[in-house]
Structures are given as structure tokens and as C-alpha cells.
Amino acid sequence: FLIPGGVGLRFTADRQLGSLSQISHLPIKAFDFSGVSFVASPELHLFDLDSLVLPRACSWPLAEIKGLNLPRFSSPGTTAKDFESLALMPLEDLNLSGSALEHLGFTRSMPLASLDASQTPLRNLSPLAEKELLSLNLRKTKVDSLEEMNPMLGHRGCRLGIFRRCIDLCLWCCLWCRLWCCLRCRLWCCLCCCLWCYRGRFAFLEIGRAHV
Image (cartoon, rainbow, N blue to C red):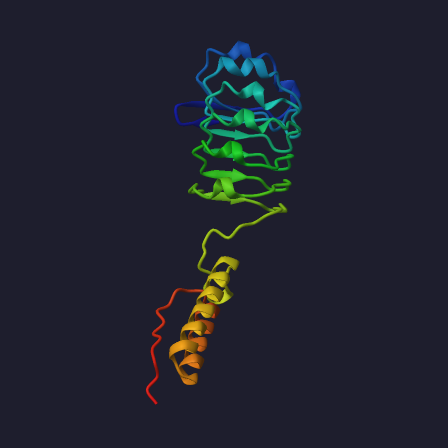
């Protein structure tokens, strides 16, 4: 198949796969080994690849491809666990679905645009917080700890931090009203604080002495 800047090879059976060194003179930019069961990793360094798809449930250590300058890499169901070996690669499209992936710390320096982490035991997604992902697949993935990135939750409720701040504000208002205000002002102050907590948004509270 054709790709920008060269050609790609897709192998659909083991019998089609011979020695890759015999075709190292060709402008091959992509290999798709999804249809085979085994491939020799040392021969991949003979090519300037832009894309690599490994066989499903490949047992390669990921350190084998550490020296490749790959923008796109796919290894679904890989049994390897040395994901940190990918940390310095300029990966934009990464597929590690069905693997033992638990942490995404190694992706911090990657210019990721697409990530497939479906069916993995991920623990958190915080390393992806500052990335502008175009595609994220978490199908059948149970993330242990999800953290809300947006502190303003609107009508859905308040985060613990906002709720605690609201309690502090209520205590201060009640103390101030007890010293200077009448009962009507205290009730008005408590009502404003409750509305502010319910909406989960900052509001300007006009607290003053009531004229009776």
C-alpha cells in the first residue's frame, strides 16, 4: 500500500515473510505485521519507518524498537511491560489495547494525538491532562482513579474543595451577622451561601445590615 513519502508492506501470512534485509533498499516507510505470528526485530532498524504494526500478543520487549523514530506504533495485546522504553519516541498515534498498561507517565514527552488504551488496567489519566488528543479509546477500560479536570461543575454539584470553601464562608458570614446584623440579614446571608454552594459557582454576596 502507498503512504506519503514511500510505500508500506502488509503481511497476511507467515509464508509471505522472509528476510527483510533483502528489501532494505526499497523506500519502505511502514510495516504491518498484524497478519503474521512472528517477526525478527533486529531487521527493522534497516528501515526509516513512519509506522509499525506488530503481531497481536507479540512478546517482544519494547526496548527492541527504542531506536526507531516512529510517529505511529501499534502493538495490540502485547505481553511486554517495559512501556517506559517508549518514553523518548516521537509517537503521535499509539495503540496498546489489550496490554498490561497501568501507567501513562511515559507519554508525558510524546506529542500524542491518538491513544488506544482499551481493555487495559489503567490506574489514572492525569499524564494526558495537558495533551490535545484527537482520539482516545478507553473501551472496556476500568480506570482506578478518575479526577475531574474542571473545578466548576455547574448544576451537577460541588467538588469537595469548593464545598469546604463554602463552609468557611458561611461560618464567617454567620459570625459577622451575629455581631452586626439582625435576624433577617442572617437568614438572607445563609440563603445566598446555600444558593452559591448549590450552583457550584462563584457569586457576589451583598451582605449588609437590614433596615427595619
